Every structure is written in structure tokens, then in C-alpha cells.
Length: 497
Image 1 (tube, one colour):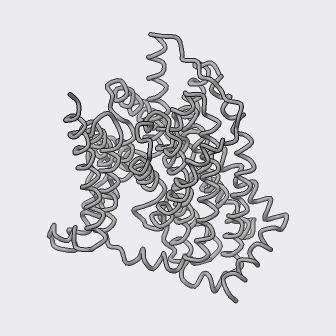
Image 2 (cartoon, helix red, strand yellow):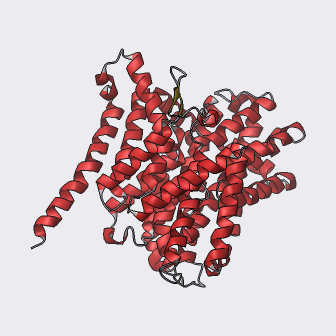
Image 3 (cartoon, rainbow, N blue to C red):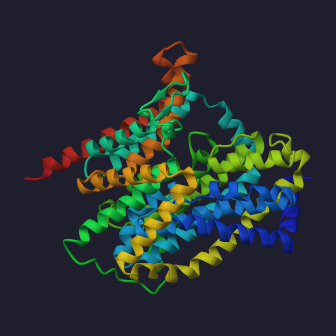
């Protein structure tokens, strides 16, 4: 049978009452954990793993995939409304989405995020069915030098694009890279910068760091500002549907974000986090209104949110076709495959066609469910902004603390959360962008591993880092990301009398 016939059979199985129930439960849980800071899809899927002992494999993976997709939707809600990303992949959404919320357009920001997620998720799911084997074969051909070059591009893009100056962006990135060095050396096994603390042997937990940087840092900064002036009254829009002007400005970023997110989601060095930053950079370059970026540009919400969800679909490609997890959630799903005695790989589509195609079909159905759930709720979610600030941020601190404790399973995790929160407050206080620090922490270890692997294989020859066309292209784009803004600023200064 053709792929289309298998897909139709998958829809027939996914539309059964049992499958629909698990899909609905998955997207509801995913949306909830995406909204709560510090509790992400990976942790939720890990907590749900015991159901593999009593639930059929198809139902379990429909549930897990629903949590995965729903987490991406939910993470944008607190990013937009409270500048507190529920998911690391929603960090970039906070840049423009929160500015829109402060301008009274929070409902429109939530709506464009929901629609962009739906468009990208649906296209990405269909691409899984059509391009999965081809994309997986392409990703396998990339070398560690290629992955290193891709991460360098993300570093340069983030440092140049965010903050009041590239120098502050680089400084913030350096802070994140330094935090990423904490822990055991991946080659020698020796502890680095742990200061003799056993709790730091595994490094700084990304969940704790992201929550500390955004939730705790934002709370401390807002509290410090409230001493000097009464809290700013944020207007609330009652309209949740996008007007024609916003739709006109959003549909192209949705498609561009999908085109960026899906192929990069396939690669181990890609994933939702990298794609959102690259999408933001692309939208800022192509925008006819670049002056709005940093002040509430809707393209800065539409593109990254589409890239985010398209990357989630891309993550499933190497998982299903190669048994290669490229994210924490995918790694936990791989362990669930093992619980059922199923080996993901090239033969999975032949040995377990009902499971694979029902899962793909359920993703399309889950996307529709998420749109129906989230779009009408945009006007309700935005009313969070009317909660008195002391109560609102006290609740954020409670959720952040619970998430940090659940992630670390020890009180030391709370100390790390507080320390990073204070560091984040100081960065905000002196005008350093916070996002590059989080990117450095997340992608720094990936860059280091691929750099050392490349040099070890090539006996320390640095020319190996530019030994492939893909690496050369990525590094050239990274250089342009640094040089072009400097040239444009120099020209702007010359024009000023």
C-alpha cells in the first residue's frame, strides 16, 4: 500500500473513541504543563511512563505526543502575558509577545501564536508522513563539524540581535557558556567549576536555569520597580480573533517559520530552541517594519511560534526512522518504545505500520483540538494581566519553586534557582539581555561536544571545522550576522548630522 493508504488507515484508528480520549487528555495535560513554569513535556511524559504497563502502545504514544505538542502551545501563554516562558522553546516569544500584551494586544498575540502553531504543526505532521525517510537520511550525513557550525550560527544570531548592543549580547552569552561548563568533563570525567559540591556534578539543570532567569529574575525586577512607582495598568483587549491587518502580517512568518523549524528539528543540534531564534532573526531581517521589533512586532511572535511547533514535528522524524532522540522528551519516548519491546528504526514503518500511522494521524487531530481549545480561551487567558501584581508574582514564585524542586528532587535545587534568579535580576538591572545567557547554557555543551569530537577525529586540525559545504555556509551566515548589524549602525551614525 502507498503512504496515503496507510495514512487513511491511521485516521480510521485515530478517530476511535479510545484514541480521541487519549489525544484530548494529552493536549490538555500538555497545555497545562506548558503554562506552568518549570514543568515541561519531558518531565510530564516521564511521570506518565508507568501507564506503559497497562495501556496499549498506540494509546500511550498518542498521549505522549499530545503532551509534547500541547506543551509547545501552553508555553507561549505565560511568555506573552507574564514574560515567563513555561518552556525553553518559548523564550523568544516573550520578546515581542510580552510587549504586545503591555500594549493591550495580548489576546492578538495569543491568537497568532495559536494559529501559527496550528499551521506549522499540521504542515509538519504531514511532512513526517511524506519526507521522514528522506529527511532522516540527510541528517545522518551531517558531521559533528556541521552541528558545531549550526550552533555557532545560533550564538552569533542571538548575540547580535538581542539587547541594546552586540557587546552586551556577547557578554550575556558568555555568562550562559560559563554556566554550561559546570559539571563533569564529558571526555576526562573530571569535575569542572563544581566548587566541591556534589549537587553540581551533573551541571546546572536547564529547567532550573530557565525558570530562574525568567520567572524569578522577572519577579525580583518587577518587585524592585514597584518601590519607585505604582504598577503599570495593562489594558486588556476583549477581541481574541486576529484582524485582517494582523493576519496579513502573520501568514508569511507562519510559513517561513515552518520551513525553518521542520528541517532543523530533525537534526540533533537543532530542535525547537535553535529554530525559534533563527526564525526571529529571519523575520527581523525581512520585516518592512524593523523598527517595531523589540516594541511588539507581531511577526516576532508568529514566526518563532510556527518554527517551534514545526521543530517538534521534525524531532519525531529521527525518533521514528532511526531511533535517534534529538530532545529530552523524545529520549523519554524512546524508553517507552523499549517498554513495549519495540525498536524504532528504518523497519518500524514495516513492522509496526498501524502504530506509526495512527500516531501521525492523531497528531493532526490533536492540532485541531489544541486550536479549538486555545483560540477561544485567548480572551480569558489575557485576564491574568488584571490580577494584582503582588498576588500574581507570588504565585509565579510558588510554581517556579515547585518546578525547580520537582526537577532536582533536592533543596539544593532551590538554592541554585535563587542564585540564578538574583543573577538574572542584576542583568536586567544593568541592561544585559537575558536570552543569550539561556541559549549559551542550553547550546554550549552541544557546541563543546561537537567541537571536541571534530578535533579528536581530525587530530586537532582546526581546518576540519570548515571541511564541509554545510559548515562553511553556516559559519559564513554567522559572520554576516555579526558584521551586517555593525555596518548598518556605522552607516546610521554617518547619516546623523
